[in-house]
Image (cartoon, rainbow over all chains, first blue to last red; front, side, top):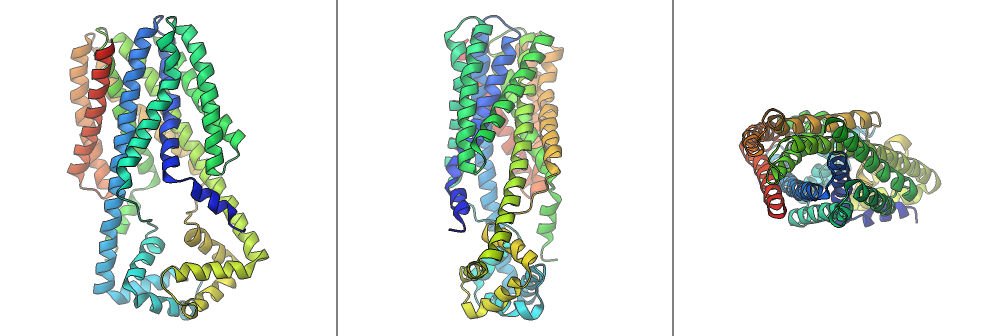
Length: 230
Length: 230
């Protein structure tokens, strides 16, 4: 099985990617904000208010941002596709020369690439598909995915954000809540990083270490800044 | 000039993309968090503390996340590249058949694709480049870019975040500061969306409207949640 890895790579579906995008920031930023506020206030009530406001803001900003980006990609693809159809109809010789140049960039002579160029020129749909991928480097996006992508990213951010915030909801004293939150979040970040590593083909332990490090550095910086100015 | 648009697309360099990634969230999330806290506290001092903690957390999380993602992409690319070199050496017939299948997926017969397949098989470097792009769909990342990408994303987040926070630093009364912050941020979001639209080939006015809408919805939700629970 020469392409075992590619199969693994394909398993990292778009849904997994969206969960990873949302949860990576959801676990990190609300945790770091709550840690930062713990350096400034004694009572956890205001930390919970700030944390929930941040979760709402972050999940909406990331979800809506993902939605509009996916919609934009789909529209961009369709525009480029329409343009390629127009061009192979209006200036077919130039477009055939462009296909030839794609192959020349891989060191082929004109004689070697001519059969493929001519075969493509007889099949407009395949020709356009070829130009989209090989000349423009664009993959066809699924326009129906935009909404699900937005909900998945936003939902994963919110789920991730509740984990570090939960201790502040149950414990009144900020620094005690911070200690429990840090312990819970380190475990969650490590588990998330490990699973992410398995899905993306990275060494899981290394991936776990990286996500914990990012969360720790972000939270440490937020805590020190908040303590310094409050 | 048939591919005028492609030129425009190339102008949206990686630096611009990184600035867009960082600033989109940097303008939105700290603004929404500060708006949310304005719904819960009267004095702006704590909003500034929370806002600065969020900017530190967000810019570090996004910057480090971008750094590790770029490094991971570069390593993934090199691993796949080494694997392709191994495969064209060890199982060249299978790899030639794979190139043939790429062309068959564009409706070509074996006879039509054979000259290209054979030409590639005589040039290992070009062959591997071809497989990387056309079989695996991978573009060569620039490994030196990871650090700059991280600094650009994190820096853009911080710059974006300071705009909505500035009024809270100068005005003591939270709701007054919120009004000034909202006015400044709407202008900044619209300008950012407009410029972003010009760089990404989207209609600038529509892009401006979208970024303002995302910021407004995120801030509105954060404000209502904070006010409801405080």
